[in-house]
Amino acid sequence: MKYSRLSQIIGAGILTLSMIVAPLTLPASAQVEIEREGIYEDNDFDWGWLGLIGLFGLAGLAGRKRQQTTAYRDPNRPGYGE
Image (cartoon, rainbow, N blue to C red; front, top):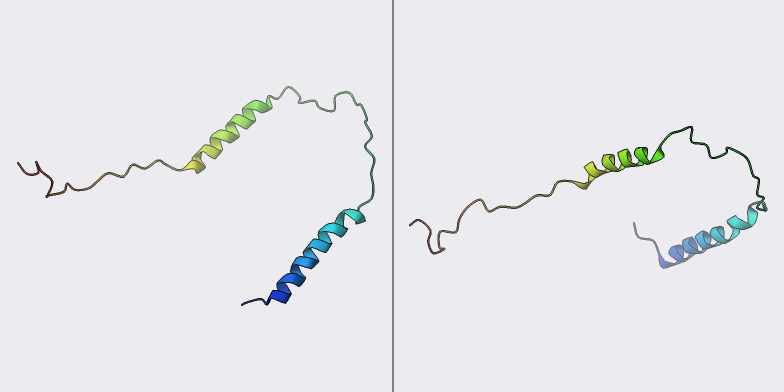
């Protein structure tokens, strides 16, 4: 199914317009700093170990390194069959 050039331009225009209008529809909010004690407590959990376990889990997605070996020797090569 081929789209005409006009429909592509209209689609790109609608997408661009929606990206411009979307931030304008959100309510404004000021940044207020509230200091709370203990908001970042980790309850003595070492999050570094969890990250390390996650990296080991992702290592399996890397795949294996395969070495391609030749299955035969060239019979025209010197020293073959002597």
